[in-house]
Length: 442
Image (cartoon, rainbow, N blue to C red; front, side):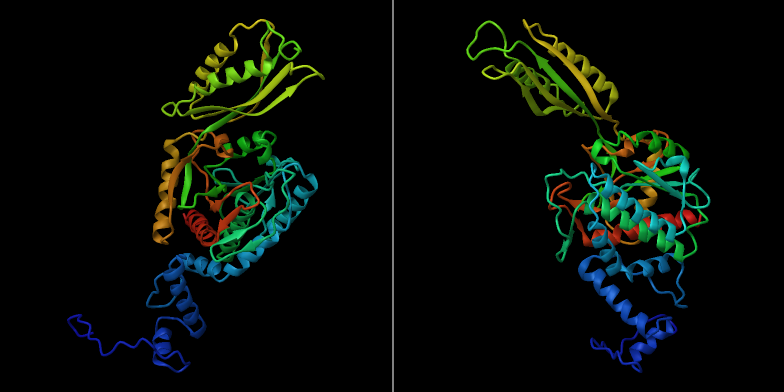
């Protein structure tokens, strides 16, 4: 380069010497890269170019790394360890109705938290469905991270073996539970390696009843969320890199219709099963895309005596909704439909669960914006979308910023083919680490 800033190229060498005494190695040393770091840098750049991994940070003239770059190096050097840890977690089956399996998962996570020097928080732990750990600063006016330990798989599904292909990792609960837990562990370890973990207010809450609509953990989750300044729910993200900023609620009811036991062909009285079927068709018509509500039915059951038609029929009534006010209006319409007179027919309805929606909140926009800035800085795909399915994010008070779906991108949830994107595992771990690091540094 001359005095006027013009660059003069002598030659372009596509096969630069990589020997210990080569000129390319000497040039790398001038910007602070020893031989091992140079080779690692070449691999990182090639990986980012061809596989979409996060781009390595720019090199400064001094070669000194700041905390962000050191955290990046900590994680990228442990990509294989991340996947091995995930394989180990998938070897522990902890389905919702398996208390022994859940206890094994809790013991494993407790060992991890103890190793990272996180302390148990008895105020938000019941040792049955909820376990919480915090830094010495506690969680008050800090960040609360939420994940779950149970895998909501049906008991009749055989445990799928862990396996990998070039793009995906497969295993039991790998997307819904295991990958977010491993992501959380390595983010905390990266912060601890930079001596930034224990000086910040931070809480980790894990619950074990996702498969039963979080009905037993709800109270403690709400209490812990009220203490925090922001909440991040580590549910799986979407395959296009989107996290979740809004979720619908989900109310489930058991609707039962009873009548007299009738003989086949006996005239004069309605059959409970047929009467219920007709009413369910009317109830489904209450669905409205504009009002963001959907009504459907599942799990129809009957009871009857030998040589008689069913005298009792029931169905699981499922209502997906965004606005509690609209739900209340639809509920009145449901009663109007069910109250239609029919001789000899009685009906009743029982609320089984009601998971509140995660509604759009002004307080959450700043949280999403800051995470988006960090994602752009590290060239990580990120955006937000809405979801039809509920999560514990709906339990967070409306005034507190919350984002959901911050776990790695997953597919085929709650099936034997459940999987997580390998690239998303490292991307989302880095994104969470860099966000927490920014909070720790003020």
